[in-house]
Structure formats: C-alpha cells, structure tokens
Length: 239
Image (cartoon, rainbow, N blue to C red; front, side):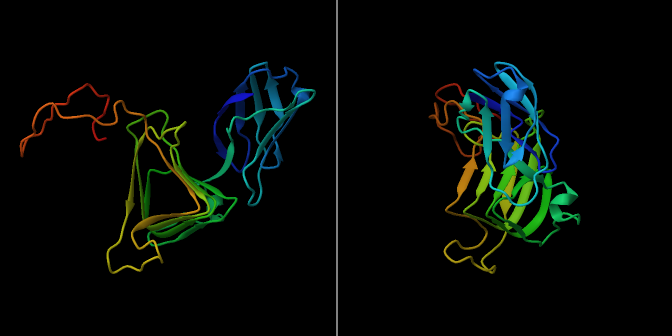
C-alpha cells in the first residue's frame, strides 16, 4: 500500500526521481513494474517501506494514470495518490519553443495536458479554457511567497483547476484576479469577469485554521483598528 508520493509532479521531459512510501514492499528492484501515463519508470532502489524510480519522457496528450505491480504481490493499492506529468509555464517547450503568453493572449489547455504555473506573476490574459488541468503549487520553502494570476475569463470545461487540495493545501500566498466590466462580452450562462466550472473539478484549499470563525468579545466602534475575540485563534496577518 502506498501512503505518500514525492514529488507529486514532474516534468514531461522526464528524469525526475520519484519516491513511493508505503508498507509491505518487495526489496528486490527486479520485482517491480511501474508505469506512469503508460511510460515505464525503472526502479532504482527498493526497501520494505520505500521505492524510488526515475520517470521517462512522456510524449503527447495522455490521461494521467499510475500503476505499480510487484511480482508475486500483485498491484499496489495507491489510496487515490497520483504522480502527474506536467508542462511548466516557465518552460519554452510548453509553448512549442516560442515565448510564453503575453498580455491579451488566450490559452487552451486540452485534455491530457497538465499545465503547472511556476512563475510569480502573469500578464492580464484574455481567456483560459481548461479541459486538461491548471495547477498552482506553493513555495514549500517560503510561506510568504506571493503569486499573482490575472485573466478576464477562466473556463474549466471537464478539466481540473487546483490551488491546493484538502490533503495538500496551498501554503503560500496567491492572488487570482478576474478583470473586466459590463462592456465586455458574456459567456453564455456564466457571464463575464468569471471563473466558470462545467463538469469540472475546482480545488481551492489553504491551511486549516482553528476555529474557522468565532464571535466578538466586545463591540467594535467605527474607526477602530483592533477587535477582541471570544477565543484564541491561529489566524495570520492578511488572511
């Protein structure tokens, strides 16, 4: 059984060392057949609790999949965990060797393409249509890192947009701004200046705060810049 995969993402160009942590693994590297999106991931090391492999190059648009088979054991339970091949926003290869989108450009993310936003700021984009996945990951080394993403329309159509999940929350800071006014064109049903979701998965999770809400312990008068709460909280400045 797999209990953790690190890292969760890797480049479509391959060459990433992936570590699977779990229980009851074989210690013989020859026992393993690991495939990710149909691409072999040759095993480098194996213990009873940890297995590593090196990802190969993934070519084309392929649905995400992961399979770990151990000889005489069978297929390993993944507990819903997944390693995902991604195309990095910062990589020229993502844009066909050309430059990244500039202000006013539109982006289409087809099914089978996972676009990972690894830059701190984008220009104001026109429309982003997501049928694959659009993923934002935090800076694991600095929770104060702030990223900015700007667009007039984001339409997730049968795909996935992820800004942290319940199990893997977004721990840095991010500002997603939708631009536009009443004079801009409307998407049927959804309108303008909109993040639309149609048959999609939209995950937006930050760190869990306790409690998520509470009561005032005293009245707050107009113009005051402090409040007194009825109980202690772990909220941080800016939240």
